[in-house]
Structure formats: C-alpha cells, structure tokens
Length: 398
Ligand SMILES: Cc1ncc(COP(=O)(O)O)c(C=O)c1O
Image (cartoon, rainbow, N blue to C red):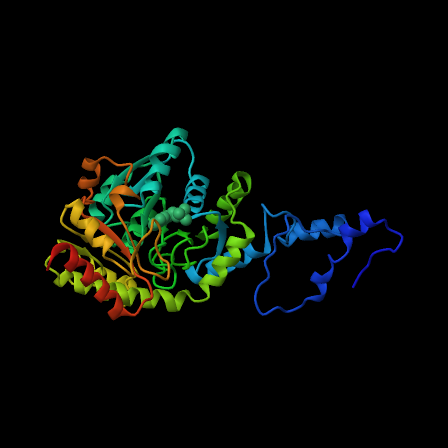
C-alpha cells in the first residue's frame, strides 16, 4: 500500500514507492535476507529505544540475519551469547585480540590450523603478546608451560591435521587455576557433536565455512561463550569490521538446519573409511579417534560418545608420482582447500594449511610429506569405500 503523496515529483516518488511492502509481507516460512545497510527510526525517542533494546540501526553493528545466526550458534554450542564473523579467521583473530593486551602470554597447542598459528606469531607478536606452543595432549607439559602472565590457553577440539584429541576438561582446569581462559576452535566437530563450553572452555570459535554451512558456498565464522568475553569481541568487531554479511549469515543459517543429520553421516563415513585404511597395506598410518589404535581413543569416547567427526588423515608413502596417480584415480573425492562440505574432499597439508612451515618444522609436529587430510561427505558409504580402494589399487597395485 502506498503512502506517497500524489504531489511528489517522480524523482522523489521513485525513492519512496514500493518500500513499504515489507510491512505487509508477514510470517514468511523462511527467514528473508535483510541487505539494508541501515534501519529507519521515527524520532530520537525511537532511536534511544532501538539502542536500549539492541535493535537494528546500522549493518556493521547489527543486522537481522547476523543476529539470527548468532542466536542459532548460541543454541548449537550451548553458550550464553555469540557474534557472527566474516570468516573463521575473523572469529579467531577478533576473539583472541579482544581478550589480550600487550604483555600477556598465550599458551597454544602446537598442531593447529596453520593460519591460526600465524595470527599468534605474525600479528599478536607485533603488539606485545607472546605465544609459546606445546603438545596439548600432554597435560603435564601444558601445566609446566603456563606463566604468571598467561591469559589464554588455545587449542582445537580435534586438531588440524593430525586429528589429536586434547582433554578439554583437564586443560580448562589448568587455565582456571591460573586465572587464564580456555578458547577452543570447534570447527572440525561443531556443537552438534562436541560441546567444549560444557567441558569447561570459556570461548568457542568456529569456522562456519566448513561443516556448519556444509555446502562449500559461504565464508563465515562465530565466537560463542560467556558474555563477559564475547562482548569484548563484539566491541572490537564493530571497530575492525569483522562482521559477517547478511547473505553469508543467511546461507549459513540455512545450511545449519541440516547440520545434525549431515555431521552424523559424515562421522559414519569417516569411521568406515578409517577402518578400511587401517586394513590397507599401502597406508602407513591412519589418524581417526574411533580407532582403538588412536592414542586418545578412550578420551575421545568420553568427550564425543559415538560420533568422532568427519575429519581423518592418512599417511601414504612419500612418493609424489604415486600420490598423483592415487588422486587422479579418485572419482567421488575431490581435491579442495576446504572441508566439511556435503561431498568428500581431500587436501595436502604440506602444500595448503602448513605450507608456510619448513619441512623440519612440519616433521617435528608429525606432518610428513605423505600426509593427506580427508573430509568425509554424505555419500553412500560403500560407494565411497570402493572409490578409495579403486584409487589405492591403481596407484599402489595392491
Ligand atoms: C580448524 C580451522 N579453524 C579455522 C579455519 C579458518 O576458517 P576460514 O577459512 O573460514 O577463515 C580453518 C580453515 O580451514 C580451520 O580448518
């Protein structure tokens, strides 16, 4: 219904007409996408009310799609509050920077997503925050490495790419006994399969680009946890502009509606692949926590129950020609520098997430030149196993 005065010139009318359909389109079944950079207010009292109620004024501060995603993330992770960010890296850098100051020390796991390590060593180091790295599967080593100025302990629920499993409750106890907070990257498991906040973590960060979105078509991230830490991240996000855009927020919300179904099937496929690889003579090592041979298998059962996530890694013989032949003969599993999508993908950490490390640095943390990381999709399990067996046979003749 138009509210436009007939006396207005066309040049004015074209700016106003049609804008009010929003008020009459009520109760849509799916969330609309709110691309508007700003929301109008009637007068100064209305403006004040909007501020008081944390309503929508300007997109960089708040947007309906971003708020919807943040609320969904708080539910999925079981946290008090959340912010949605432009990427997983935006979530990590905003959460960590907002909760440290010059002179602080971060104690971090040594096997993490490579670019997270670079945030610590290349960015925070410039602002007087020092980070040291230790093996977080060794609680004694963690305990010994805490310093009087340690304010953050940082790890991943399942580490990238070696799929090790830290004792989150044990690490949280060490953090809290030393007045530090524990931040966990839950990207590989998601809140559908693991709840680090319930195990004692103070903040959870996620790359929603991966399993959460699940369709390899949106880049997004989130920080979830106690308001006293997330609010600091929100303040910094508004200044740095690390917020997620409305369309990506909408895409991730849509993807997350099927998260629970997808990640269970992905975990089942990953477990079936891990068992097959363990029996194969041409695979030197398999890293997946459902296997009794995994060093933290019992802890993983305690932390995750029966679903161990969609990520596994295998070590093939260090022979580039044969690895190429193996990859060339895969049909269902595609090489992709991402993970968590509905199709199975693989990546090669020495030339992707850990390409900035020297070979010696990589080998020291167990990332060999034969390591392939696999993200299981939701394909039929038998089809997937056959596809891998075919490629292994083609490359290694077994
Ligand atoms: C465990 C983990 N955390 C964070 C990130 C960064 O996420 P994004 O690419 O959305 O910035 C990645 C990317 O692969 C990741 O694997």
